[in-house]
Image (cartoon, rainbow over all chains, first blue to last red; front, side, top):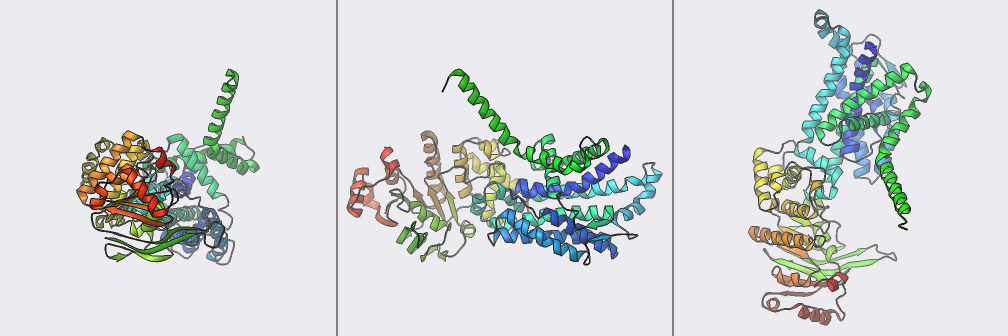
Amino acid sequence: MLLITQTAFELGFQYALVAMALFLSYRILDVADLTTDGCFVLGAAVSVTLTAAGHPILAIPAAMAAGACAGFVTAFLQTRMGVPSILAGIITNFGLYTVNFFAMGRSSNASLLRADTIFTIMEKALGPALEAARIGSSWCELILSAGITILMGVLLYLFLGTRLGLSIRATGDNRDMVRASSVNPAYTVTVGLCVSNALTALSGAVVGQGQKTVDINMGTGIVVIGLACLIIGETVLGRRSIGKGIVAVMVGAIIYRLIYAIVLRTKVVPTECLKLFVALVVALAIAAPTIKEGVGFEKRKLAAGRKGGR
Amino acid sequence: MLNIADISKTFNPGTVNEKTALSHLSLHLRPGDFASIIGSNGAGKSTLLNAIAGSFYVDSGSITLDGRDITFTPDHRRSKIIGRLFQDPLRGTAPSMTIEENLALAYLRSAHGKAPFSRITKKDKEYFSERLKLLGMGLEDRMRQPVGLLSGGQRQALTLLMATLVTPKLLLLDEHTAALDPATAEKVLELTKTIIADHHITCLMVTHNMKQALELGSRTLMMADGKIVLDVSGQERAGMTVDDLLKRFRAGTGKDLDNDRILLSD
């Protein structure tokens, strides 16, 4: 049971980066960025390929840079070329399939056999100390995943407090006002999508090195899972401030992984139906405000009818 | 200061919806001028303001502001020297961000806010609070609250402050008090007058209130069919009544001023 919880936390922190990316693009910028799926694989592919070549640490910033490039393409299509934002993401995502294929050396998957990853390096460095402290070196992966995600969360929080960060936040709120503040919304959308896709790719990079493998289809549906984490977190913690929002995505991602682990173990929901189940939960969660409003209206209509008001 | 030379704009050219919104319009504003524009529905008042602000590029003619040709400058660059308020008080502020953050954004227009990774400093906050005090709405004590919690009047006053936080070369007011209740409108108008006078801002204001158009500022313009048909200032304007204005309009265009809101307002 401890192992399951531990794994859930590890994966939770690793996938929280995708939720954080969606928090930036979907919540703050108000852009539905569907580059996510392909970008996640891109990060993993770049990371695994470079790790196999013997550069596990360099692989991380390289994956982030690749993700930022993917984000730039999507942003360029929607801000400068007039492609509708959802379509821009879908087009980039589609194109990324080929890019990912080549990033893995003309193959649809790649694995690491005995190459050092950031996790094995971490274990070599910290393992003995953890063993000596009777914590166990198996916690290394969790510590590293949590460290990376929390560091990114802090950086994102600080970034959103800068003048550039403020104009990115205002872009999702009121584009007219951004223009009135002498800032080009096309620029803020571009920066925002580059940062968010760098985070998505980072997630892929960490997951790829953690699982020592990458598959061209491993990103399918990541955007929905990320949204699920985002929404779970917001439901638990609320969505008032930026700081809270960032903590919420981490909490949400961990809760999602815990639920996932429980479902897999207890088979409350048959494993083969899991995707449909998640899709339903996400759709319902996003639709909740509309459903609530509709129910309220019907209630009022009923009440008015009873009074003979019509 | 502002020099508009022979500008024209036609929307949807070559279709059944073709509409000439501005037709060979020229206007010159001297520094410190405060001109109000009145006119019928569809006369091109807002279109003129949009053309100056850069919401679209004009088909012909040129616009010069403070010695710089801005005819082909994109709107977000023009906003460095042009402040603007709309009728809708929600359009000028970001609702989910705090008052402080909104002001920080408006402050980006100054040379001071250039560094993209700099943060709001204590000094900035003190300056914002000082300026907010001048509004007399107690907003200086609510600087960390989201703007979405403010009333329409408060938001419009805040927008006014934001538009003039970095003194603009030109302030464009598009019926900025029309959506507010009379008492609030009065208050926002008073603030507008004070701020414009204190900072010697050149201002162009669209209004539907004829009395206001005569009382406020130094110059009254009337528009019809995308042209300026009447331009009065100085002695001539000082003795004018609303009736005189209507007569002059009829003489100038051969038709009555038709604006549902003008008819309804006193």
